[in-house]
Image (cartoon, rainbow, N blue to C red; front, side, top):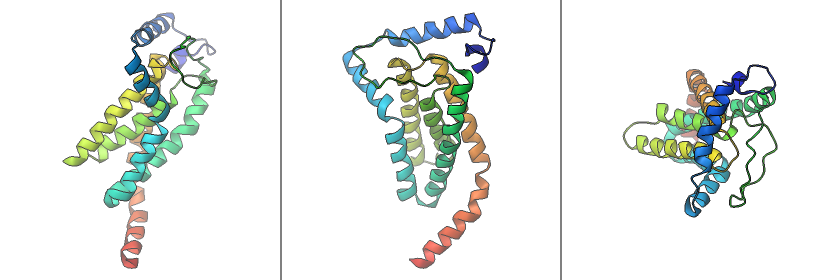
Length: 202
C-alpha cells in the first residue's frame, strides 16, 4: 500500500489516490461542535494517555496474566515507534492540506504514512482481544478496541491523515502485535522467576 501511495517511489496509483481522497473527504465534511470536541480529545489523548493507563491497569490490577500482557504491549509499542518513523521517511507521503479553523490541534510536520496513532492503538487493541478475553476481560478488551477504532477515525476527522494512512498504520500495528504475541512464550521463564521472588518476599 505504501508503494502505491508514495509520491517519491514512482509507483503511485492515481485511482487509489482519488479513492483515498474521496473517502477522506467524507470525514472532513461531517463536522459538528460536539463531535469536533470529542474527536480532538481522542486525537490528542487517545494514544499516549489512554494506552499508558491501560498498561498501568494491567500491570497493577490484573494479576500476573495482566503483567505479561502489559509487557507484550510495551514491547510491541517499542518496536512500532521507530519502525513507523522509518516507514514515514521512506514513503514520504505528505499530510492532507486542509484549513480547519474550528479544529484546534497541533500542526504535524512529519510525513503521514503510516499513521503512528493507528499503529499504536491497533496493536494494543489486538493484543487485548487475543490475550485478554475471558468473561469480564472481554468487556474491558472490547471497550478499548472501540476506543482504538475511534482514535483511528479521529486522525482523519481532524485532518492529520488520509484514510489509507490509517489503514496502513492499523495493518502495521496488527502485524507487530501478532509477532509480539508469537514470541511472548520466551517471557514466561522471566515472569515465573520474578513471580516466585515476589511471592517469597511477601
